[in-house]
Image 1 (cartoon, rainbow, N blue to C red):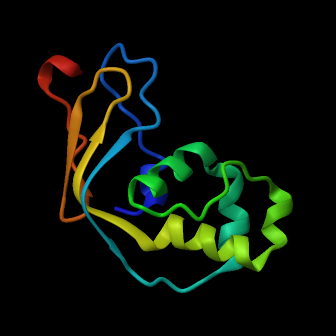
Image 2 (cartoon, helix red, strand yellow):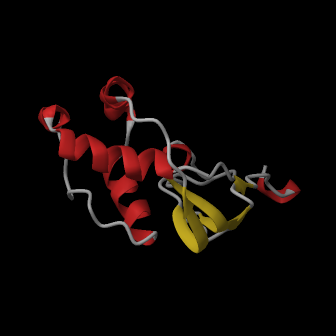
Length: 122
């Protein structure tokens, strides 16, 4: 699961008001090379919750992203490469996504998050 995907997931358990961002519990991650597209990164940047991306990347041991970012940084090739690597090339293979409010664990196996809710959570 890419961090791009993680940045768009939230806990949808009935009654949860603070289900984003899901905390990562990393057992195994891999790096997969992806073609670089500055245009894609510039277009997706406004949709990214930056702090959630930084925290997720750091949980995988990648600490190259700045704590804060703004659109003026999109002119820097160095920034774009680091953003690209964190967003698209870091993949959570095994672990869990954890709801910040309830602590509910959603397992991630072979890179696929299981976000199915139990009957009493719907």
